[in-house]
Length: 176
Image 1 (cartoon, one colour):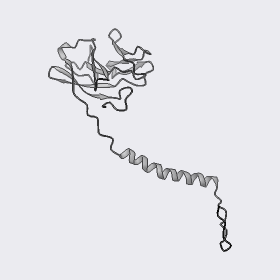
Image 2 (cartoon, helix red, strand yellow):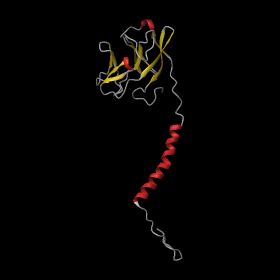
Image 3 (tube, helix red, strand yellow):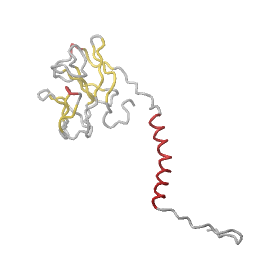
Image 4 (cartoon, rainbow, N blue to C red):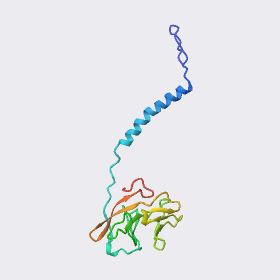
């Protein structure tokens, strides 16, 4: 602590109300935080994901209610393709009845399986159930949201996986 020299006048004590202090502090924080958030919101995101096109199966080989297992977008991402009996929103193929979803449950990542008698994708760990005819929506259980949908495209007589809608369980990004 410095002492005033005999020639200097002592500084008057600083008196600020609690209200003025809170307002000044809030303004200082806002002045720093708001521009940073605005820059982050307006900043272009990282390079968009480039998904591979992966052939899954021939159209003629896919039977109603018989799931086809495959991996997408890489070998560590199990998925299921299902031909439903009826047309499905977001489905592809001649009757718009083909859908595919990540097999990793959104609760803890256990692999779901298709149960044709119930027309649901069911997790054996905690029984979360997802409806493939309704965009993989969770019907019951601890899952946090719908299963990520694998985007499909019919090319000639084959079905290909070409993208993923939603984030695969346990990932920060779908394409590693």
